[in-house]
Length: 415
Image (cartoon, one colour):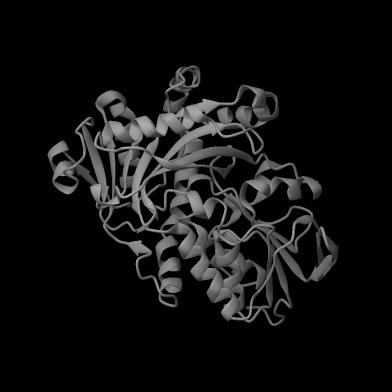
């Protein structure tokens, strides 16, 4: 830490990024206040797949995906959907995404996702040692399955992970069924990450971390933040619907809702939203011992305390469009394809993944406001990257040196 420690920090967002950052700041004896109009952990932390995925280095900015996108968009029963009324607003994001769908960009993203993913579980382990994790997390591995339809894509993913040193075990159908005998073998093969953890209650974990944050002296203000500004060399103002709050430094960590603030700061970051869905099959969690992801369908199943959670699909449609019953039905159909014994589903839920066109998060200072730090855009990996992002951002705020190359996550790449 530098000779002059930061005097105070305000964090906008009480999701996993915000609470982990707040906890790490308190460990550095920096007074911290978190703001959110919603209860901590009640948004994406509630509804995600619950996977800790340190292996997930290969993202969607891949040249092979471009061939399938038009067909998927025109199908009402595929893993990708588009709200057509949102096309005009999302067109700039789509154009940037297409520019990033090439081998060079794909490998760049994989390299720098691996840099932080490889540290993600150690960062969580530090936190887990301080809280009671009983019935909240399990380490039984995570299985991915696929058909022979896109074998070239699967082979490419496996090679990229191998080149980056990611541990993976390729499985036959028999080996998959030995692990999960209740699955219907509609797949041709798969991959097993036997070291992976999964959450049995993601919201419960976020709440536990938040409780530790409060116990350590952190503050929480449940108000709607309207703006954040840097008004002096060592002064930022977070303005809510009720009053103004002054801090030396501020953090924007409110996921898909962060763009409102970056636009206010005059930084046109192309953040948009992948809408994801889940349903629960109550009392069916014992059908699986661990999460199973069906890559061809873009969905997964996770045994949780609330039941067997079926989650997935990518729907491009922004924050305001209503829930899509077609997307819900797609997930239900996919779940019953793998487990025909499933009955009625409950708890239809829609959440928002904050996604940038190069599939790297934004972590670092604002372009024009060095005392305002960004921590958003983690797309499908927000849950996995919460703890390590908290460590990185707290280090930035404390002016600590790091051996990580943080330049690929800086917002300057869009300006």
